[in-house]
Image (cartoon, rainbow, N blue to C red):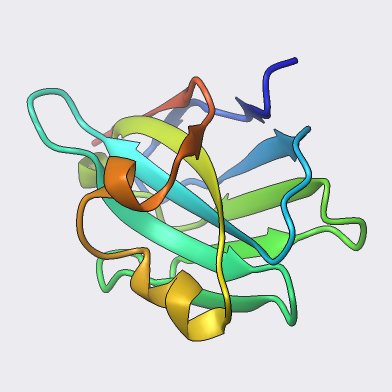
Length: 131
């Protein structure tokens, strides 16, 4: 079974909203879930992470105040609510999963090389924002 399945991508005009979902089919103790994105010709970059214990969330500056990461009560789905979308937000969006000892470790995992920090990835969902 695919461990992570993303959905909710699409095409919107600048200023619009989308809500991405990621179904989590793999249990990991002390789960840290993240959203990442990769635009054509660019490296994959972090967007937000959330620590399952306590739902502590961290964001990169580019999306702060516009995007919200959340986890449902069962821990089986992680969401990314995206408001005020800009053309620069156009990318393939990926959900990722790892274990973390604490919220600080989960937050730190948003920085650096995503593929090294998170071992489990979904297939991605495309978000396209037109001007």
